[in-house]
Image (tube, one colour):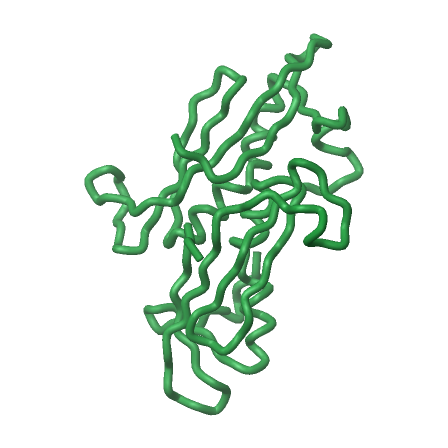
Length: 106
Length: 106
């Protein structure tokens, strides 16, 4: 996939101190074809691919009413990281925890 | 500018019923060079261009700590539309007002 943006983080499995790198990347928004999805699309409906490299987790597509919404949804990876946080701890490259308990997630 | 995502809206000047089209487009995130900005950058710091076509308004760049944040900030155009709403009313292509008073803006 040709990607346009990425975030590089460190992660470790729960109860394991070894930290490895994970790259979360998003692609260029693309027009959604009606026969590929179960919801009704129009000429503006767009998808945007999210790929996860470094963790054994499938990539997925997010959909928006237009390309701007699709890329906005795909580039908000907090819900993804929160979901994966059941199995992994995430850190910035600086070593700081990804989710500061005092921070509210945007 | 080569853009990757856009939103097409209708707008009218305040107290004028004529509606015209405006296209808000964002570019591919790019690495920010230290000599171009006044804040401290690292190898991940990224910018993302926002262009407005149809309204006499300058484009601008938004910056993030990485390319994912830059494109996420640029693709959230609500602050831009809110700012321009002092001079214009905005509508979806369906004709519905962009900001429904009962909606909370994300």
